[in-house]
Image (cartoon, rainbow, N blue to C red; front, side, top):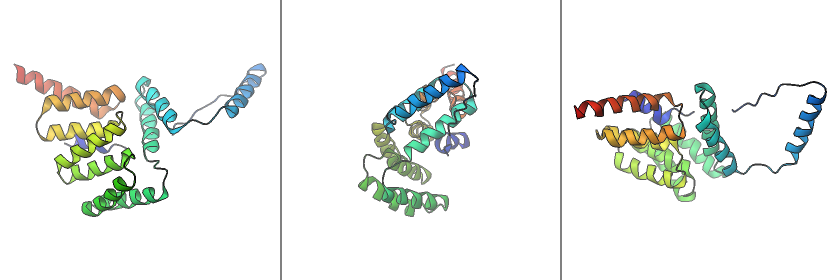
Length: 203
């Protein structure tokens, strides 16, 4: 169960290191920097698409974790000071295990910003912590309609299937997590354990 929770709430940047060249190499880098400055800024969707592409390719666990953190940071961007404040208050209430208060704040978030996936995901987490798995799954499904690549929501879905002892469905959900985030160690272990358990049932 602890490992499942690690998958669910393991969230909390990408730093780009550029080595300085000499001579023509330095001039080339300078020219590239000027070109970068002239390019239009990435949209939020473009940033996420790029980060998810990097996350899928990365095979270093620590580097992948940094990319995942950058994705989580993007998910937190609501674009609204009001929503940000409500999310902060919900997080404080969750930390204090005041789950009903957290739900009050998150209910407001989902009403005011129904297209903000992280509001639904956070509310799903609170329902899960209250062991209200039905409502948690409903909010997970809403999250995934808005952001199908949400590996946190998929981990929550897998955790609920495990709670219901539906090993095959849990395995399928964790495999979806790994398709998005291949280096998530806790999900790797869950897939291995569930596959072994299912193989044992078949003997």
